[in-house]
Length: 113
Image 1 (cartoon, helix red, strand yellow):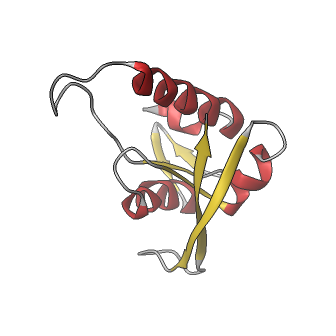
Image 2: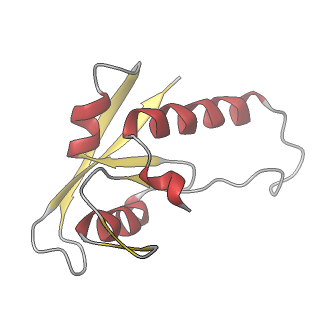
């Protein structure tokens, strides 16, 4: 799904709006809605005839594993990009090594209302 590669501000806003809508619903069963883990990263990618490659793709694919169900996590680059543009707060989760990524990556949870 290529929506994962839209501008981080647009993506973060969409995710927060969806979370807000879900919180307002009455839940009558444990399976009434899906609590997903979302990881957002912004970085250059390579589009090789429809096959997306590069560290940007790998980081986005791996950071969601740090999130709790229903939580949105972002890299420091995303935080820097959206922090003065959206009414959200960020909680520092960790600096971690990720599989097939040479440098450590700082991961933050995004919280908004």
